[in-house]
Amino acid sequence: MPDFKGVRTYDKIKRVCETELGIVSQCCQPRLAQKMQKQYLENLALKINVKVGGRNTVLNDAFERRIPLVTDRPTIIFGADVTHPQPGEDSSPSIAAVVASMDWPWVTKYRGVFSAQSHREEIIQDLYKTVVHPQKGILHSGMIRELIVSFYKSTGRKPERIIFYRDGVSEGQFSQVLLYEVDAIRKACASIENGYLPPITFVVVQKRHHTRLFPVGGPKETDRSGNIMP
Image (cartoon, rainbow, N blue to C red; front, side, top):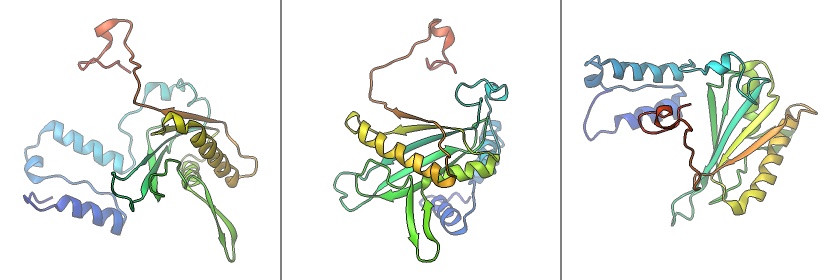
């Protein structure tokens, strides 16, 4: 990619590739690539490998089927969040995004979908939806259905367990979000096949808390930054 100062070449390349051509892309700057630095080239290769469908890392426990609630039967893992416009942008929509694992039992490949919804609406409205077609009748769609179908096409098996991580929900919205979104997940599953209702584990993730975890063995069980080792 040409290294022109003041010209947003990167933005233009990404916009054309992703919104007009529908292809993945990887940019690099000649001045950095020509130095042939090992770390830079390794990072570049890792990015390219993921974008063409490869795996960079796999947990050893995944190979040996020892990950609880995941490797004993086909499991799909979702992550979902809603981002809202800044104060004062009263006409801008909120954006809901859902990502899901696309392989099993390794859980290393993911696919994401997103949709615009009502301004500052926290509940994800397009998890499951139906539309009435004049000739075809009721058509089922939605982000959950789309991702489960993609999981099936990728693995050849329907998920027998669903783990759903939900971010950005305040305590006052727990019951409302839980009732609506779990119901939407169940409806999406039932629309794929009659009687298809895999168990759902719905986990609300919060960052604003005072819980801290420390290793029993002290600093020898942490990395250089003090984080607990996996």
